[in-house]
Image (cartoon, rainbow, N blue to C red; front, side, top):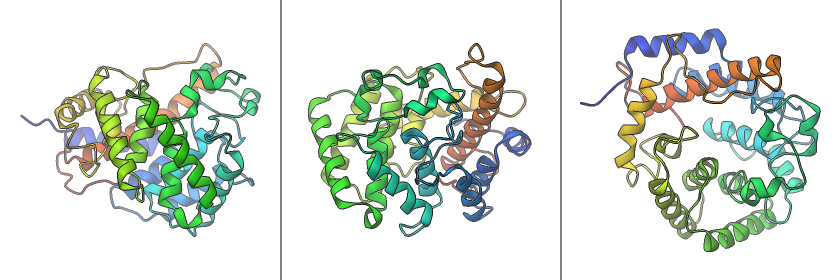
Length: 308
């Protein structure tokens, strides 16, 4: 029997986001469910963009620094993509300009040294050896960021797109299995991006599917739903055998207060900063859960597909 989030569970989740979620997540949920346009989302996002075009200011909740970072900029561009901002939008153009100046030897370093000047999770501490811990930044965040260059090709510097694509193609030639859950998520976002060359998309989909099928389905860092959040994803059909299991797990994880839980905790580093990050993350994850379940038509009484 196909499991569904009950209408009561859906109502509790919505109430949780309205009560505790960031303005950005509240606006994204209303947009995703077809209840509002993009303007509230853009109004909530603009305060996270810096004069240099990059994004920061805790947009990635485990990273409180106001400084621009590739990881926060990837989140911002993801949001702009979700609301279908066009290539001429000032936020898109500014963010792509930041990507051009932050590009370093074929990739985007995931965080800058300035992260250490503000509260952050321990895995976001900067070091000169950071690339070794993040697989050379080849997938996270660089594969995802390449996807946004394709999406907004008319606003992207041609030389930047060419260099980033060439580096990814070299990486794919050397990598049979993408090991990390977050690397897989970034590769999957590239696979879903409009404008990706057909041959490259084929390679990415093949590599992500092979890697996910070799990946532990119980890994708390990610599931097949993260790779295919809607049935329209090019990964939906090849991962169909895991999707139902992932949906059941997602529905079963909802907590009594209506929100979804976190599996990580860095309160031992900074209890006050962690309390804020935890609240922001729970709103984010709860919003994504509702959008994903709605897109897969697995919510009682909700028939319209959510964006995402």
